[in-house]
Image (cartoon, rainbow, N blue to C red; front, side):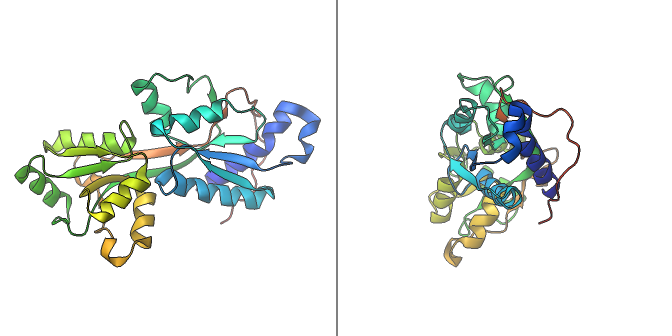
Length: 262
């Protein structure tokens, strides 16, 4: 992620120079906004706050995280699209907002035309996590339990059409199991219900699963996450990029990259 942050920092510093010439000499002259199109506590939020912290340190100006969840990430993404193209707004966009939502929803924006990609910043695997009281510890045991108890397993996701939902559907179709999908408005409330035992299984981005596993009280901690890679040819992951509004002019060839240690 260090290399990605260095590239992102380089382009952010060059945005105003490309758009406004001499007026960019003091950039950034005010805080930079990083929109996370999901509620706090999910995988995008974890990645976004790491990036915001490092960019703040390098820029000498605060990068403010703004969570704008809803509609599978579309609300926050549209807020970025409608923002001024002045280099002061970015959105942390995952596979859901860029690649999936345009095929599921009627959007008031075009992810290709209305956003300009800046940098790929992260790629994380999707893992399976279970409530510790659920009697499975491996992928094989999960499959066997679901087949022996058709329709009895409640599987949470971060929302209908999300990458976690589609990962679960891919898993289900490949293993021929029958379970109930329970969509939430983001990963954090889904994980909360998983720890509370209201659902038994969840497909989650790894950062969100690891964060919750570390911070939960012992009685609510997950079993060891099981990678979906336990199924042949089933290796779902999600990627995060940091685009800016499509009208923002980007530099064509950066001359050098800043140090991004840490």
